[in-house]
Image 1 (cartoon, rainbow, N blue to C red):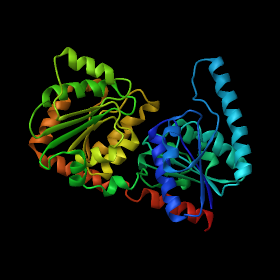
Image 2 (image 1 turned 90 degrees about the vertical axis):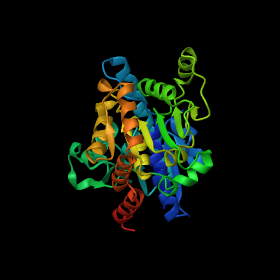
Image 3 (image 1 turned 135 degrees about the horizontal axis):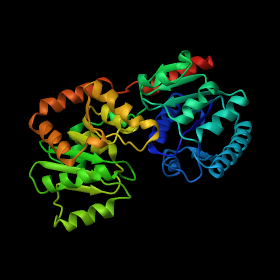
Length: 368
């Protein structure tokens, strides 16, 4: 079987795509999988490490309010459709699976016109523009959150699968991860991060947690500042006369997220669908601060779904202060039974069967 996987622009699109690709490779070791991405996109730093061949398809984000920008967008998308059509005619795949990001549109549009069976996965509780636009071109729409189904017209195409997460997030044990990271079994470990680039609001909280936890026995802070804010955080700490002790793990980027999530007691983060799914897979209590700077405020809907299930605390950015978050951390520290209950509720809604559901439904639709 020949499969095209496409999705790009951020880890939130790329890692679910890789989780799906891994399931297809596991089920069909002799099959051929090619990943269609955006030139210079985030996916180029990740996908080749997993052993997949890549092809570049031109595209561009949509920027309202300017005729010039609309012209650029249209030119790139049309060029991408031409490129995708040429690639698909040569490769002759049996199916195409998209996980969001603007690169999905030219690939799936061209695939549909060539008679290839196409599918998409939507990670968020409020679907992205690309996937909403592609609804009429695909046979099935897999949902990370059931709430996302409200925004699609053809309900017969919808399948709630949950968000695809790499298997290691489900299987890694807390004690194993702590041993790997050099942490004690009875440490209270807080993980805070704002994504690969970072988030100023999250980093302000991280600085205050650093000041509060620095040097305290049996307390550990793992702080991913993001690449944009690492130097700024260091300057802030230096300006306050804070020299971090060994219990503060400060990094610009967390490249062993599976270990850090498994090891922690509480995670503080934005409400990206992937980050949430990974924390749920590990059964972790979360404090979610959805970013207001995303399309259609979709992180709010993601966080609300988890909070409504009792799996997380949610604070909107307009209401957040470091003091509020630190009070929540203190509560979970002093009442571990609350953190454990939140973790159980998170685990209960974790997408443990997502890749199996997606694979089996597609195989059934293909008639194989």
